[in-house]
Length: 55
Length: 236
Image (cartoon, rainbow over the protein chains, first blue to last red):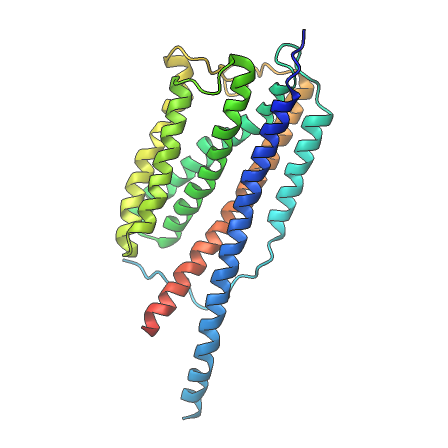
């Protein structure tokens, strides 16, 4: 007789989805934070290089 | 040591990455096909469907991610190209994510078949050890500040960690173990009915795409981090 264990399958698929989605989210957040730092650096350096060009 | 700065001019990557979205849609399609359109195995019941996420994640973690990590690490030690170090770092982290899924779903499947969540048999124990070693690899990377030294140390650890991969593969032949023998990666033909084999291969393709998308995204993060670190160091 085929055992009734569908709830285990649901649990495993749910757990896998949580792990993968959490990892994707963490990567997206890390990329966003780094992008903000990089853009802030470029923005702060732009006036300096413009001053140097003007001098 | 080579410069950590990406080859100029470096353009800051955009936040959008359609490949990740496509890969997640592929995984969603695997869920639908596996759960709704693939027959239930008579002896194991619906729990056998855990194989479509457990075995594919294990295959990609062991034979793709950690092999890539080892190859990139070895090439880094030879060529000293920081891109290779970033590839190794990215493959290790994405591989750790896939191994986490393997270690989370395996016990659920095991409980239905063996009646126990966990057993200290060779394959399960070696996979758990590999998970800890890769975690240590990533902690090591966070602990060593000097980039060249960090890359060298982690390359050596990454290569050593990869020695567990063939051991894990052969463990079901070398030891008495509860873990089933391979049904696909074996010299004879796969022992799966056609419908299940198609679902498995579809799942394998979708998870491979997810691996590529995550690896690409993680590599971009590593490149951007090195760029920001270099610019900040220049200013200090």
